[in-house]
Each structure stands twice: as C-alpha cells, then as structure tokens.
Length: 566
Image (cartoon, rainbow, N blue to C red):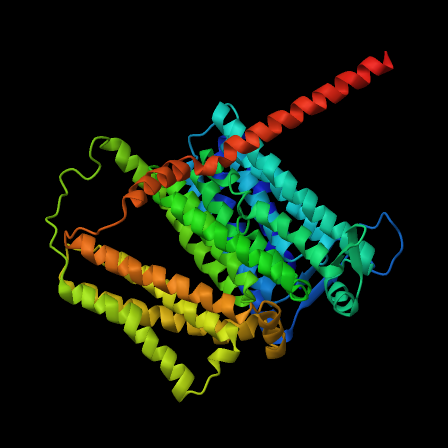
C-alpha cells in the first residue's frame, strides 16, 4: 500500500520542490526534483510485482454505499492494467523530466514548466488508478486543462491558437464522456467499476432517442465514452489538434505518449467488460480506427516537417490501437500502446537534435557525408519476398494443419497472426532501402527482424494476454463480441494482403528503374489526393467555418434577445 501511494505522490512532491524556493537555488532544486520521479518509477515496479502476485489493491476515501451527495469519490483501484500503465507513465516521465532540466535551463519560465511536467505525471498516474468512473473523468478533465497550459509559450500567437484549438476539440470529447457517465449512472445506478460491470452484464435497459428508435443501453453508453476517447487520442475527425499542438516544446510532445494520446486505448481496456457487451460499439471503433490509421499514415507521407511527420505517424498508430480494440484484441492494443509510447517518445526527444543539425547546414544537412549507394541486390529482394510472403504462409499452414489450431473458427487467432505478418512486412520493406551495405547483411537483418517480431507477438498473445486477462473465457468473449461477418472479415484480409503484395512488386520494379504502366487517370488522381492530404483533408478549414457560423448564429440570437428585453 505504501508503494501504491508513493507512485502518484512523488511526482507531485517533485513539482513542489521545483516551485517553492528562491531563484538562486532554482537549478539545484530542478535537478533534485528528478529523484522523486525516478523513485515513483521504482515504486511502480514494486507495485506491479505485488499486484501480479497478490491481486488488485483497493483504497477508497469514501463509502461507495453512502447516499450523501457531497462525498468526493476519491480512491485507488490498482489492478494489472493500472500497474502496467503506471510503470510506463512514470518511466517515460522520468526520462522526459531529466531531459527537460537541461533542455529548458535558459528559459525564463523553466520553474513553471518543470512543475507542470511533475503535476501532469502525477495526474496521469492517478487517472490510470482511479477507483471509479467519475474520478477518472475528473482527472481526464484536468488533463485537458494541463494540455492548454503545457504549450508553454503563450506569447507566441500561433502557439496560443493551437492551444485554444486543442482545448476546444477536447471539450467536445469531454462533453460526450460526461454524457456517457450520466447515462451509465441513470441506467445502472453505480459508477464503481466492478459493480458497474456486474449490473451492466445483467441489464436489458434501452435508450430511446426518438419514438420508435431504441438503442441498447450498453451501446449508447459505450458510444459516448468512445467519442470521449476519440478526441483525446486524435481519432478522425478529431485528429486536427495534434499536428497543431506541436508548437509546444519537444519534451511536451514526447510526454503525450506517456498516457495522454494513448488514453482511448486505456479507457477501452479499463471498461473492457462494458465495451465487450456491445458488438455495435466495437464495430464502429474498428471503422474509426481503420480510417484514422489509413489517413494518418497517408498524411504523414506528404509532410515536409519532421515534427508534423511524427505527429501524423502517431495519429496513424493510434488508429491501429483503436482498430485492435474494435477487433476485440484488447491486450494487443495495450501492448501496442506501450511499444509505441516508448518508441515515439524517444523519437520526439531526439527530433530536436535533428532539427538543430539541419539548421546548422540549411542548404544540405548531409553535405560532406555522401555515400555511394549500391544498386538493389537480387539476394535482398529474394529474401524480402520469402520473409514477407512465403515464410508467413508456411507458418499459417503449419499452424492450421500440423498444430490443428482451428483458424477458420477463430477470428481472434487470425487477427494476431495477421498483425504479425503485416508488422514484419512493414519493417522488412523499410530495410530494402539500405543500399549502402552488403546485401547479405540486409538479408540477415530481414530474417532476424521476422523472427524478432514473431516471437514478440507470440509473447503478446500468450504471456501478456494471460497477464492482463487471466480468464481465457473473458478473452474469448471479447473476440466473439467483435466478430465480423465471415465475408467481410475475409474481404478485409484479402484487400490488406493484396495491397502489401502489390506494394512489393511496385517497389521492386521502380527500384530497378523499370517503368510501371498506370492508367492516365491515376496520375490526375494522385495529384488531387496529394493536394488533399497536404491540406490535411481541409478538416481545419471546415471546423473553422462551422465555428464561425455557430458564433454568428449565437450572436444574432443574443442580439434579438436583448432587443426584446428593451
């Protein structure tokens, strides 16, 4: 219990150490404050061990059965999901705070900035260990306010505009989140997680929006909560705030990956028994996640700014996370959340160094370091074809035929195998760009990459899934709730596989200088799509015009009301 309490309290103590004191000792206190956040990380690891061996830890400073309205539902419910998130948040928080001490040492408002980093880490740790849905929402709200303040440079007009746009879009999601909480309480009479799941599983309540049009209660609640998660995790069409938010200091954009931008994945997993009741919500999440993943990755390819490119890459990866939730692969979504958070936070921290080097050589950042590139080797491409197409097919046939795993009756197993293949294909495709090294080295790297990804995903399937969800029947129920019609599921697999194979063929032909014939209308379409994606689908323009229209309507209504009163 002591370790559990220390995890959220220590970053708050670090914020107080930075804030209180004279200006003469500011730098010393900033360095000392890194230690409490590091100790929070150690405490989180201890908590993870305790929860894994002894079960969840509960601490409530209120009586859930009390009828008083003024009772604040403050407490902690720390299970395996909470502890995994606590380790991730405190670990990334420690790195980001330590980095920020040197990164901001000449800034006038360094004290405020470092204190806000500590406070944000503390709020995140409290949020993932909330004892009930209302406490989670209050901390969710507080994060929206902290994001507004963390842009830091409020004297810069574009930064201020981006902060306001972020705050506005997050408010839309927060209103939907609040609506979901109110509806859940009215239908089920509780916001305590275990009780909420138990009542919802037995409930047959429905919600009527219009006469004759009824929704299942769980579907209505989870759809509203999903919208709340979509805004925080930059899902389409709420994705516009993230690229604009990159005016914030680099360490803040890295801190987003400690649990802020990943919030939807955590929320769905925290409420997995509730989301698992509604197949409709899971299917909608699949569509939203797929659209976001495709659009995010496509918009990333047309960016000419490193932070914007990383920002749209994050949007695409968050789309993958929601898509995995929509497929019922909740544990895979958490695994993706952790891996992406560690990777992208590191990349964002290093992007500042890349930008600095580029500014030193603005005309040609790599001048003087030219390396004569060798041509593509048949060995490299042959290895790539085997590792991305033939070997996975052999593994699939062995799994189905030799091991007698009923793939045709289990969409969940196919989903995990497909993600193994698509991830390894993406990684191996990038290795084909390594022309300046011997081809056998690239081929060896391809084989090692395939084996590494296969073993990592198998770990995620077996060990990590069993760790987060020890009951196999519970995991099976989530996959069953997310089951798609067989024809649709097969169509998605065939389309994704075809795109990957065609991509291999196209890259191979272009790499060897061969002309790839395409219909004339394709070139015109490519130009139009390029313009569309460079302008970010014009979502910002549309939202601006909608906001302008709403403001005009409200002003006219207010003016008429004043005239009538006179």
